[in-house]
Image (cartoon, rainbow, N blue to C red; front, side):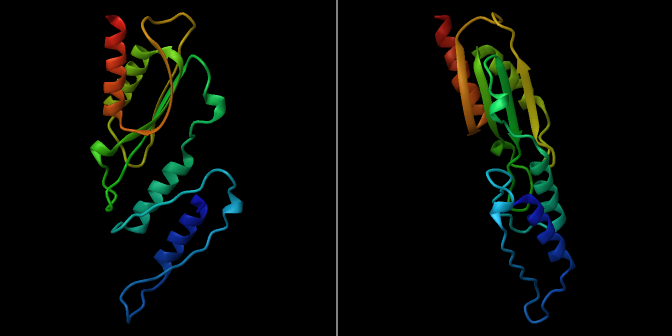
Amino acid sequence: MPAAEIIDALTLLSRTPSDASKGYVDLEVKADPSKSPGHGLYTYLLLGADPERVKHVVQARDAFPYLEQADKKPGHIVIQRLARFTYELGVLPQGLHVQVWAGDVPAEMVIEALTELQAMAPDARVPQEVRRQIPPGSGKGKRISLDLVDKGPLQLWKELDTAVRNDQH
């Protein structure tokens, strides 16, 4: 459902008194996906988290500019990281996944950008990003193009490192 409707529902939920016979509140919201065609739709399963913490997650993700076709140009590197959460909305350190665009750039430069991103302290409320524009003719070694969604950073780093090592022999 659209982020705005999730936030409205969470606000309504926090204002609704609990049913004394059940001890909790049930709220069912039916969203109209045509209000956000093609983008801005979210699916979440968060258990045991208070409405305010869920709002922070939804607002952070909604405000983050995801990769679009305009970002995907030769010579560009864009790596984005969104925190993965436990059901209680704690950040999963090993569950941080990245979206990567690397358009015809040296593999070593992608490794450098990925290393820079991994050095940032993960914050559940703030998605993170590293962007680089690589001038033509820069860098040596194997040139690669990647368009990856939801890839583990460590797995990606190992694959890139292997590509660089194999290219040097």
